[in-house]
Image (cartoon, rainbow, N blue to C red; front, top):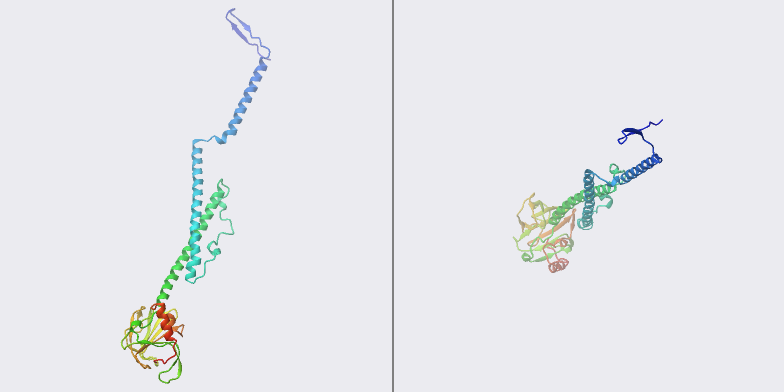
Amino acid sequence: MSKVKYYYDSETLSYRKIEKKKGRKLKIFVLSLLGMFLSGFLLLLIYINLPSVQTPKEMSLQRELNNMQLQFELLNKKMNQAQAVLAEVEDRDNNLYRVYFESNPIPEEQRKAGFGGINRYKDLEGFDNSKLIINTTRNLDILTKQIVVQSKSLDEIAKLAEEKEKLLAAIPAIQPVKNEDLTRIASGYGYRTDPFTKARKFHYGMDFTAPRGTPIYATGDGVVARADNTATGYGNHIVIDHGYGYESLYGHLYKYNVRAGQKVQRGDIIGFVGSTGRSEAPHCHYEVFKDGERINPINFYYGSLTAEEFAEILKKAQEENQSLD
């Protein structure tokens, strides 16, 4: 039961009963309902737009995130450029350096091995920029592996170059007697007439005639294996071990300028022309060995002759005449 309400009337100096107006409750109800609707609508708008409303801290974090994403994209671009440069180095390595040094190229599978099988980037999944981060990490891993492989390859190339340099210095590549000191090329490699028996016999070296005492030069770097006169027929002679299977012999010397065990370099004077042993006149009998087999010395004069000089000496060496030993 509702209470009766009164108000004080100052004119009559008495309390008068408040009469309720018809439709007031309905008006209040409608206004309340409208207020609730407007409040709900405003709350809905705020809720919908709440994600776009950021606090200063959120805005700062978002800027950092955008900057990090930009840095990752720039890093990817730099790695792509580095991979392009590395690919050119790998191509030169396989098709130039290794071809020159007669070494097998590194297979592509070996350069990029170790990136298949298990998912090594599982911990990086589930983030907003996971794809970008995983791609960057994978590219960095591949680039690091390729650099390691290429670095080891270049170390190997450096060793091959050093060995190649030693090999080129060791190969007997010049005449044992200078052209200006020569009287003539008396005999070459092949069948010749023996000066003592007059029989046709294979001559395993080349004879360089020159006056007694003419300097004889080491034709390549090496170690003097022997300097004596104990081998039959050669008289005073020197054998140099050049390594890599090469040896050279210098026979009928007048005297020595080196001793056994001594290291020599191409162009060093090792002795002097003479006519000791089984010899008919002063000359240097010269032989070249490869893996214990005698080979034609004329194929090794590229270090001291022009093309014209080589053609002339080749012509003279091929003449079947009488040897001097």
